[in-house]
Image 1 (cartoon, rainbow, N blue to C red):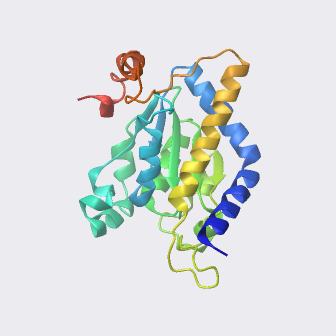
Image 2: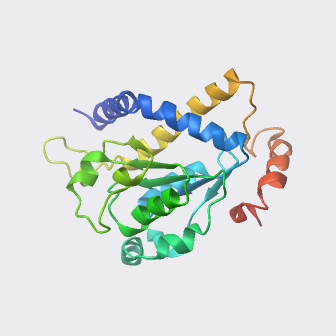
Length: 237
């Protein structure tokens, strides 16, 4: 089986497996939008690629506040990023106090390290919905480092079904072609599509970014910058 075949089959399986959870997550996100809340998106290591996909993205929601610490990004130090994800207490520093209408989205393939687990716990403790985007198979095989898993803490779980170790090729002894980033982006787009459908059915206009490289894009985005920059520091500058 080629990588194209295996990845396509995996995405189809993910879509089917998560159909009900995506419906629930979409309603949760729409409720956040209607209440003028923010989607707080978080991850560590390569899961930060998913956070980047949620933020200031053409076609994406403008009510997104990415949660981020430089130590969590591998390009700022590979070994340091692994240590940061395993560091107790960093989640509280990064999260702060969620707003009353905010929703937390935690991307973590293994879902066992202190940073993502503590984020999910803090979100639940603040009585905020927590959408965990994680892998059941990978999480079950990973050593517990925070006493529990994101999948056991989040209020809504989107399962990427990523295999332990992430690699998917060759099929009989996988050593390359990690799939988690592809699946995270796919699940996020499935979620956005469902949110748009719900919004359309109820006559709600979503705050969606336009590409700055199409005619009228900058003008369309100006109002979104004015509305969300005071609450989303990453939009400044």
